[in-house]
Image (cartoon, rainbow, N blue to C red; front, side, top):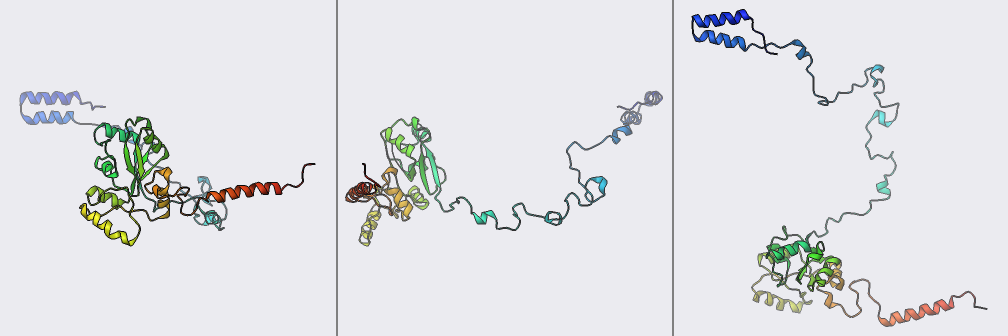
Length: 300
């Protein structure tokens, strides 16, 4: 509330300013008007906003506080006398040690860059990727469809209905739905083994792309080196050495570039082999004879 100036004081200041017009009288008038007074009741009602701080619970201050004597910890026991960790199970062998964890996280698994068919079609429509030529990881990275170079590129089938024209694409891996979508559109897809270093060399122009595996044997080393040097490059794409990778790229279902090395009736697995046709026939005959011999009684 603004202060109330006595009428006598204002009249005196105005009379003085009329009789002696100087700056000191005007200053005194403005100083009188600027005087403020506050009521003591306003200062007494000051308080913090609700929830501004949490009231500290004072324990062990008598029974009237509600937290006296045992301070809310109960009677006896480990929880009263010390702190117990949340995962402590009473001293027995923990369940995680008895049963173990379900599954694990493979920290050495290759990290793949994912490319979906709808995004690939958008890049083709914008003219950033030429669909008439073979699409390799080099074209996908140079067109900025794939950002950071990782251990490989995987083709996924999101937006499979948007694929308009046939394409010839080579990637590290591909889902079954993506393979079906590309082949339904009249295109071709192949999966090839890459590493992060191999893709980097492709982008930098230190290596050339090929879908043919390296020949096995020391006698083939010199011809391969001469071929690479004639083309003006320093490196050639590597081939898989781990069993899982070899089996993946040997499988025709994955459209692997090593699937042509399989013989008729041979399994892509390096451990499980498909038995020959003669063994299958022999097993069928043995099954038929065992069924007849294991009868408990004949029909009367």
